[in-house]
Length: 399
Image (tube, rainbow, N blue to C red):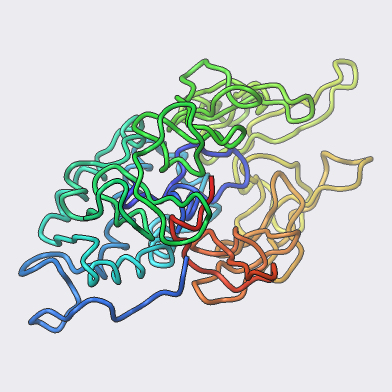
């Protein structure tokens, strides 16, 4: 869904905040505008016509629809990928701080068409997408509600300006760019939304590829897993690929049972797979499923995924001599050093950037890295200094 996309379709197992900003779409930049649309007779700034959905309401409504789709795809384990954040709230803010404000300007300029009376049909389709459906870039119902008016080869600044399944690109990374067709398998890409139906953008090769299915090898020379699948057993030290497993199927071991995150055997919702002890003879860690909340604040704990410590704390592990023993410690807040558990730890609403927790920032707020911006882009000046969070236009993204 290149016109309204937000999520990357491949998920990371540990330390994920599931919302892509610039990752799921092909880039978004430039200062936002708040008054670009003409007022309707009722005083709003909707271009949807009588009875239509106002453009300003679109981010929250679309966020609700796409979060519903991912909830359906991933089932009860969906919350594990949100890092304690609310999906709808976080996605709404990512959309509002992406190209949304710039698209309002383009509607007023006549290069983007918006029909609020057709939005609900789009939302209904999106909320009912299957896992495989998340790889379809542009639903016809959504293009009927929001589509560009610039044909391929025409000048553009935003993906939203390009008619149909197309994106805005510049050979030189400067605006304006030109509208081009979505990329085919083997062509260079920046993000999943650059690629045609059924394809993803490999984080390794930056080429559009067909994702791996259940049982297929994933990454380190193999494609990423498709929606609803997890790449488990990947060896980062030796750079050997893992195997795609059903996300729901992987989280199936019950409390008290053995588990093994390396083998892709994880615990059911509400239960954590913890590193119980080291089998010296076998030379491996023995894992077991423990009810989340078993370890209280300040008490001894075992590291696990997800955390087995009580809500608001994580297992701060000990020294190299005691790597499987820790203490349930308050999750760091903004401006504090990131936690050192299984994945960088920060309280909901903050993200780990360069070793420190930073609050997510709206457009115009100073930033230290892309990850802390709702837009997914911390802009830089020609001198290399940061110019604050901002939406990134399609034509400023180079291949």
